[in-house]
Length: 230
Image (cartoon, rainbow, N blue to C red; front, side, top):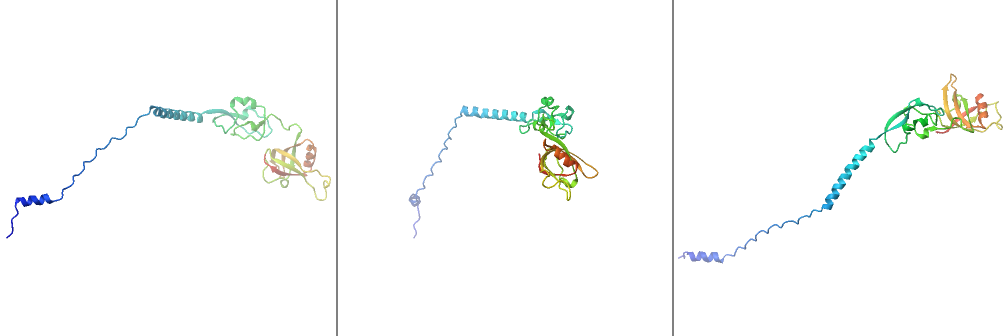
């Protein structure tokens, strides 16, 4: 016959069970370290911001500064004198890469001579003008008439360096032993083409070559060779 379990038996079974471990309480969060403010760094940051702002203002002001300079109003051919009406005042943003003549110096330019062909709309610099009238001392200015076949097809320009080569005609003309050597010259001006296709080119030559060049040119006995651009 089975024995009935009493209250005492139930208590015994509960007491025999393994004890339940206690759960640890969560640790309290520690406060983070407080950052100490350093006034000197704050002041330095403020100064840097102010300096950056002032620098930007100065840069914008400098880039936008306008200056009055001299520009060319009408074309002036190489060697010609420069008149007051050939020049015009223009406003230009200041740029250290450009070296135009200030408008305040315009009176010093009037009466000088063009050191190259001056084209309308171009800025005028000191390299574009000279105080020497053509021809300079020791040089002579000679007009050389040359047919189409005796000059380059490439248009000649002022200040081009050329060689004037005497032409030997078959069965006549100067003897090979007695003809002059090629002569160096600088182009000053190029005239229009005439009805025969010839063109007169004004050139600067050494004073000792002037008469020879003029004599050969009169007989159509010169050819022009382009050596370099001026």
